[in-house]
Amino acid sequence: MDIHEVVKKLVGKIQPVGKTNEDNQRFENLKVLTALVDKLLTDIDNVAMEKDRHKYSRSRAGKFASEFFAHIGITE
Image (cartoon, one colour):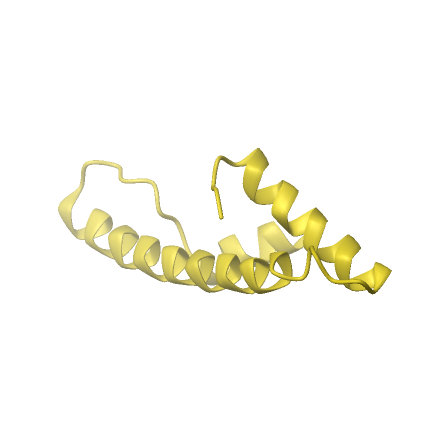
């Protein structure tokens, strides 16, 4: 089981199915998941700010994070 599967199991299903009671719970799960993604993106953004550092390891991580944002269409 990878981390994606673990998070999905912890959060629960998010895809609506057209049944009000079930979809209400899935909507709450969706809110939990989006809050987590927001926090993770903030963490990655903090690393992306390191891209212009002089120390190689910091610069490498920052560039990787910055390239990830470019890949998903988020500009800094």
